[in-house]
Length: 223
Image (cartoon, rainbow, N blue to C red; front, side, top):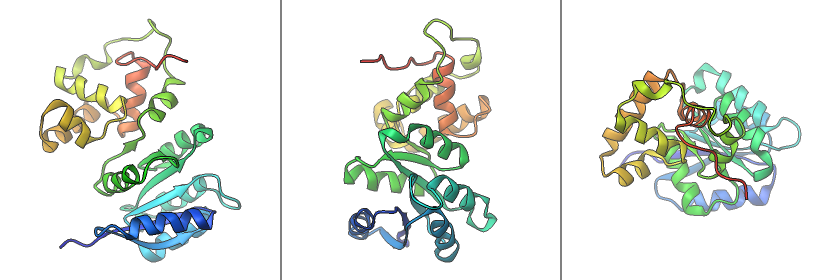
């Protein structure tokens, strides 16, 4: 049996941390290796415990989660640590800044427990995670107006690669894309990797941004 996914929880509310710990420790393939109440403590504990995934709140007193992300990412010895931001609808700008700082993805704090556990497994496996709906809304802020998009950015992609990028922009992870297109996970990962290389994109967040900015997909209509 492979070792469990080691998780560090960073949140300033002790009850929130206790709830996450109970949920995570109930899974046979996960264990909580530490808790921190701010970004500084999270970075220090990450050095001590070498977690696979850090669940990072953003708005914390003292050193916030953004600075915590920067400190962890700056440590060469922590390059394998993956950071999953837990945010609220009021934290949109912070979520974008966190992704740019090096976080592997973000989820809403209101996500259901099964989705949170799935998210931990996704980022621990080396993928980025962009919460469906929230990702579209965030990136839509930077999208070009309808009709102003569309140069030849995506002409270098195959039809299947374009299809995969569209689904990435909708917030689907590799497993969900594989089910939607009836292809294997290995094939999905290959398409994503080739799209990243062809578009000179750093990660899935940049794929989403490109998809909206250049009209491959359109921002959701405002209600």
